[in-house]
Length: 404
Image 1 (cartoon, helix red, strand yellow):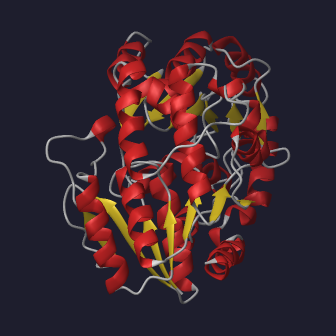
Image 2 (tube, one colour):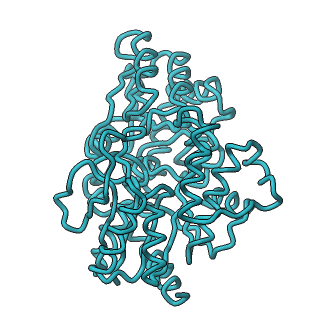
């Protein structure tokens, strides 16, 4: 099968979408499929199967290359899909690369599969300047390429109470309903999408890690917190308000005897760095953006991974990487509990810094629990391999092709 992956974010920038696309590409190619990735890039890729879409100069919102213009993106995609005789287009985002893919695929009669990776209503509210205004422009530009439809019940329910939120939910729902098939990595986000009006056939399909990542991790050893050693707590992700790194920093400040390491970059990095500098030396280190290999190496040395986001993340890839590494996971969002292996993770009693600090202090005082959680994660690591989910992914592609 010849498959096109289209995304507005790809390597070498870091993020969950980038990691998912890379994992899909590698697993599908190992199964004998041909996969070509189309994305905006700062410079041409050394991989001939990664095609650079027209990319804006001097404009990279939140540090990511940006596809521009929509017409140029659609033209490039039309030519690329035709040249590679693509049978199905898999879209991973909602910006202009994605819209160009819908337009080009429609003109060529190629079915589109859409993966809904996350809550762009929360992302735009947290990242865009003056979101009440800038989301109007974004929604209008999106609507020109793909017609929007009303949400279920008009107001859109719990998650779309404000005008800004409704704009972004209409964008998400309309794009999902324009696809032949929709993939969602978690049941909790699938339920939200259906409640807002997604009618397209929807498949809940967990993300997974490619073999090269599992090989890099190797065979993990259970975590052991030796007497007199500070518990090393790891945080990894986009340093942005929707990820709530400040909640993590507050919890670290409340929990003596632990050592925090943060990996990632974003609009909140300067604030987080100031918070880290205010703590005693060595209590918190902000490493910035690093290659995935360094993240995996850091996981081998850590005792616990923390995810501090709330009501935003779908299925963070960093949690899957932690499970593969045998690293216990603590989350503040109850929705993320479905991603945690039995016995290998903890949901904090409250989502605030106090709740997180309570859990971290309890783990630091109970090394045996850390080891038990680590062993549980190691026992579950086969479930996070992309190869475990590849056949279902291919089945979604085949259903889209049959429908077309």
